[in-house]
Image 1: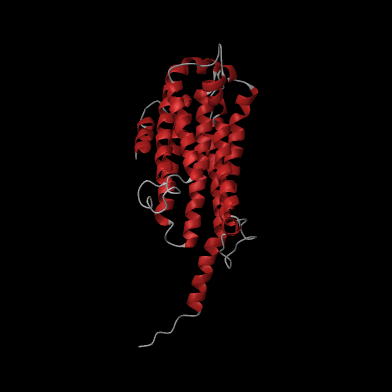
Image 2: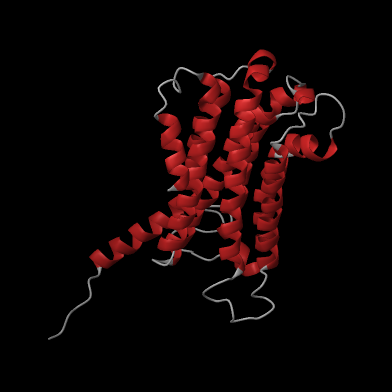
Length: 294
């Protein structure tokens, strides 16, 4: 609701649709609304059935990869250090981020059940990856999300930690970026280590387990990320408009729409065997109804 409120306040600005410089902010805020919503729905409705659980988390993975693209689009527009603006890496940064998002969704979905129709179908609903090699499945999923995140933050890491001298964009916003980076690494640490519940099994089943802390740190990190980006957008706007790559439909809204379409196609592909299994069971039930005795 908080990120939705931020998005609505930006959309209601009368000049937002005529000012292409604000389009990356809209995409980022939209991704900030989608990924917590998808995660909440996945945790809420995944208990309906085993198939519903898989499909719900397929959408969760797609939403997270779209958030990674939203971060890349807005970093390209507002966060790149002055030294790297208009460089070869800057020009290829967003197209590579789109590819990363697609790979992220594909790998994350694959880590649950394997390849659709080849490793699972409407007759077989086994969690091949997680049942045969749970550690490999978890590592694959962690890599699927860590790689786009690390790639997206390359310009930020360089700007905050490595860059020295002129053109480093050393301003007051960097402290907010540091808060975001710290919380992002803490989020990944909690996901990978399962602390604190692994130290005291059973003590954190309802309150305080790592996945709850993971979500809290993730949302707090996104909050500081948003604050830092908004400040960069305002303070650097005159310089960026004059020197940076112009924000156009193709490198902002266009790539976001492309990512949404491809991600939805991947999710549908991985979900089709699960949906067809439900249809098959319903047909069998209608063909062979149970007899009722009174």
